[in-house]
Length: 272
Image (cartoon, rainbow, N blue to C red):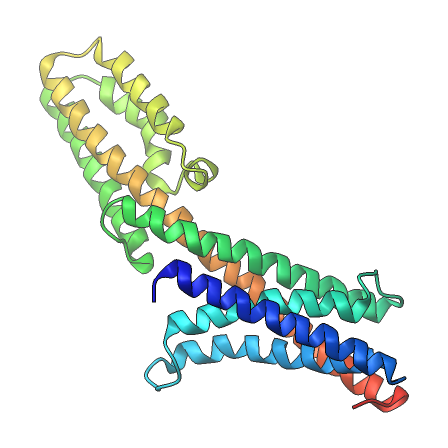
């Protein structure tokens, strides 16, 4: 099944489910029942189903569906939960601090979920186009190796040429660059402006270098490019990890309050 056909089928299923739930909600209300209970319990079930995605990931060896199928379930189930939430609240801001807190958490979870979906659809492709995959845990090791290589080149240049031009440039402009990730925001938006600016400084400096120093400068520029690519991988991978550190705790906090809300409402007002 190709991508377009699968998306059409998934959207159709969500639309049908939403229509059925709207009809059931109206029928339940017409029968003089409290219709918010029906949608509330359905919403709780959908939220619990969505939370199973985090449980499924460590159990990838079990025959419980492919990861891609679970991702699709998570995405379209999330869309359905937003629709159910709107019906349950009457598309209005809830009254009371507890309900308002729960609604705020839901909006934050839904918003972070949409943001995360955008990240997961765009960042991996950008990483693939930027050369070989770099394992997250090894990025600090590669960074230290590049810094050591750059410092070794500078030291040998000073000894061979008896000139401090490259050493001073390294001290003022490159030392901090090689020591830690730089230009995070520019990497996130896909801009190489900082790299081009640094190369312009190289070119200005090379006007005062002899041929031997220019060869050394070229070696340093190659290391700068590698460090820039490493920072690119660091920033994009870190963004995906930080998103989970926000989305997952918010999700379980919301679920805890939702279950508590269901218990309170069911106990004091009656329901399904």
